[in-house]
Image (cartoon, rainbow over all chains, first blue to last red; front, top):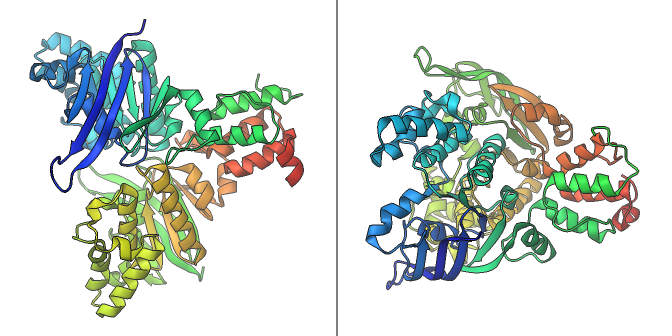
Length: 288
Length: 293
C-alpha cells in the first residue's frame, strides 16, 4: 500500500535571501516519496540535490512552499525531534561523522541521547552492527577502519535510533570500489529486508542499480521523475544536461543501433551479459 | 632507466615507529615514473598509494630505500628537496578546499610568486595555466574562486600547480566528487596536457578512468607493488584484482563474463572497444563495418 512519507510541495529555497548574493537553490520542487521506496536523486553540482536532501530532516527550512515528513511540517518547531528521529543522514566524508573512540560507543551515541535504557541500547547497537555487517568490529577504533567500514558504522549509528528513512548525500564519493560496494549492499539490504525508505543522492547513476525510482534535478527543478530503468533508457536516448546514464545503458543503446536485439531497461553489466549470451547463441554456458 | 623522472628503490615507510601505533605503509617499493607517460596508481584504501606519492616530492622521509627525482637522491648528502618539489607538483584530494585567495588570478599566481619570478613571467604563467585548464582568464580571472562550480574550483587548483611548471604532475583522486560534466572537462584537460608531453601520475579508484587515460598501471596492495604493466595486461587479471578489493572497468568485466560463457569476443577496456568487440562477435552493422578485431 502506498503511503507518502516525505512530501515537498512548491518547495523553494534561497541562500542569503534579500542580498546581492541571493541564490535560488530550489525553485518550486514538488515531490512525494512513499514509505519503503528507494529513490535516487541525481543532478549536477549546483542542481540543488543536497539542498533538497537537507530539507528532508529539517536541517534547512523552506523559503517558500512546504515539506512534510511523516505528516509533520518541518517548520513546526515541536516536530523537529520527531523528524530527526525518523530521518537519518549520511554525508560524504566518513571522517566527519564519527564521534567516539570505540565503534560500539559511536553507535550507542544516538540512543543514549534519546534516553534509551542501557539494556535496550546494547540490543540496538548489536542489531545495528549486524545489519551493516560490522559486528566483529564492535571494539575497534573508528579512525583505523577503512572508508567503507566507517560509512557503515555511521549508518549503524543511525539505525540504532530506529529511523524510518535514511538519506545518503554523496555517501560513496570518497570510497574505494570495495567500500562503495559494501555501502551499497548495506543500503540495499536495509531497504529490502527492513523496509526502510532510502533517499540516495549521487552523481554516479551506476550506484543506483538498487533504486526503484530516479528523480533528476537541474537548476533547482525536477526535470525527470520515473522508474529507474526507464529513466536510464530515456537518458541514453537523449542525454539531458549533465545527467549521464550508466555507461552500460549507453553501450546497450549502441548495440541496439548496431542491429542486436536487446530488451529495454538494461543498465548493469550482469543484465547486459545475460541478454547477450541468451539471445546470441548458440552459446554453451560453461558456467551454468 | 635513463628517462625515469622519479625512481623509488626498495622504499619502505613505517609510521610512528617504535610506538604501539606503528604501521608499515610501504614494504620495499620499487617503481619509476617515466618521462611523458601517464602512470595510474590503483589499490584499495590503506594499500600505500598516498604514502607513496608523498615520497615523490620528499614530503615524507623514507624509513629505508631511496627516492630519486631527475637522478638526484632526495635524501642524499647534497639533496635539494625544494628544487625537487618544484619539479613534482602534487594535487591532493579535494584541492578546492585549499583555495584561499580573493581572486582566481591571485590564487594561481601564489606559487610562482613564491618562486620570486618577475611579474611579467608570473602573469604569463598564470595566463597559460588557466587556458590549459579551460578557464578563460578574462572571464574568470577577477572572480572569487568560491563563486565557481565544484569542477571549476578544482581546475583553478590544478592551474595553481601547473603554473609552477612541474615536470611531473601527481593527482590524487582528481575527479572524486565532480559531476559528469566537471569530470569530463577535467579528464579532457588531462588528456590534452598529456598529449602535449606532460608527465602525470594519477591515483584513482575509478577503473574506467584508468582504462581511458593510463599508459601504465601500478597496483598497490598492503604496501607492495602487486602488479605493474599496461592497462590491458593488468585488467586481464580480473580475479586477482577482485581478490584485493579492486574492480575492473565495466567494459572489461562485461567482456570477461561473455568470454567465460564461451562467447568469442575480443578483449576491451572501454565501452567503445566493447561495442566493436561485441558487434564483431555477434553480428550487427558496426561489426560488419569495422570487421573482426
